Image (cartoon, rainbow, N blue to C red; front, top):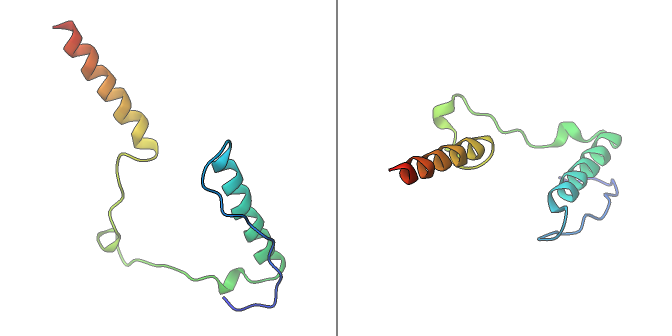
Length: 82
């Protein structure tokens, strides 16, 4: 995106304590800067005409991971009962 707006420096973070919280803060900082400079409408938009044309998501990430871990735990407990 071409703009004369001055964006804040956002360091590249790889590891460390509270990494995810800092990354979310960085994203919000950038969105705030875009909003203040009225540049949000210049961001690219990605649209799909249906879910079949979207790339598949890994089902073992995110919210489903907790459920998957619970099912694995139950499987181990049942195996130990026999």
